[in-house]
Length: 548
Image 1 (cartoon, rainbow, N blue to C red):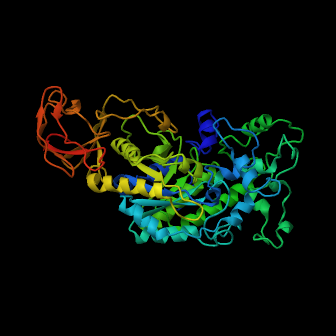
Image 2 (spheres, helix red, strand yellow):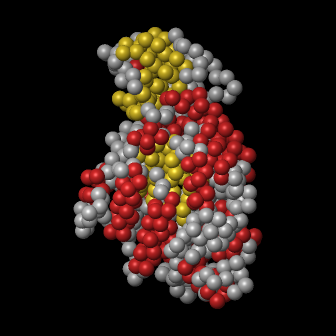
Image 3 (cartoon, rainbow, N blue to C red):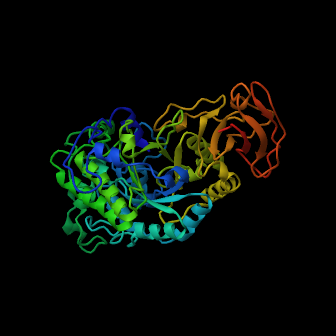
């Protein structure tokens, strides 16, 4: 994502509200809304340890514009952001839809119909690719609930597609035999949307306030949102730029110092938003019974309110399953907090095996569908996704990756091809991934991993045929080459000196022949056959005694 990288890595997530040690009143339920209760009673479920792969449809009305991430915010920012190249979202919106003082994101929502959406087809495709869970989006920062919300009148059952998106995804996932997850990003809407209350600092429309500033309920007469209050969509004014800003850069800086921060605490004077957020979150849990809740926060949001959301989810899971057999994610967690909820590392990896299970989330493109990225062939390849999967799994992690969905509900032919190629790999090599556990070390090879943590994946250098990742299952060891070696391979971690008490009896190329090998003091040596039909990232099945 664009701004999240900047604000998190620059310290904008300083408000990890609800920190360790904050205690609250006990209840008769198994989990109370404090870190110690959560950590004491929670254990990561085995289904998540075994899953290794989830697929995500990060899909909502912002995909209608097909211009990538954060369109509902960036269309209101006239100046160029540091990461932006080419046309900006503001320029795109001005060209295609008009000036945001008259045509804003409220109008984009009205155009979103999801008319070609085939959820059963997509979820079956993802199940065939090996996904063990599927995640649908419940609400993004654009504040439109994508379900039949009882607490937010702006929801997809009432406007846009006029469908309960989550209920439809849930049925498709469970029919396909998958666990079902929901991502909730709405906790940031109160600050993220504030540019909609701004204005152009330069140009012919200078000083003209954008639509959120002046729109009220009465302005919806005769429109698709007749009877709804636009302030409930845009969250109400909080950080409203003052009059008198005269340069687009100054306006960008003004927002960056306020609503552009990744804020997690309770906003002063806006407790109503937080209480409403908690009611909405509880409804998602109670009505859709997700196996996984992806919380798009640097920790737990809103202090005691966020902790109450976690405790409520776990207590509900105890009612459903007899145990807290679910996953709640958060980012930037310390070691203690990782015992209470699951660490999600966005667009990044870790540099070694991690004691507790964790998840990385990434995307083959932008989180929201981007036609410019499609046209420039900017997607990750299937091989790159496999490389990330193998690396993450070798370190006790699980990969959740997003396949961007167009506004009409379809994925494009390039995405179809990537998913199909990825499916071919998992069908052949899945035994080295699913239901495995980390080995004694995660791997070896000359290519160093990027800095551990979020947003490091773009610093990853290309892997070679000498880069290997290890997993194990029972008494079997697996070695996954991150690229196909073009010469004899020497696996140092399996040499006689490295494993003095081990005996290697057989090595097979998964989906291929048994391989001849010799084991020297410094390495296990073998030569793989040349790849056939575009195969990549070969995996070995290694059996013997004392290996694991």
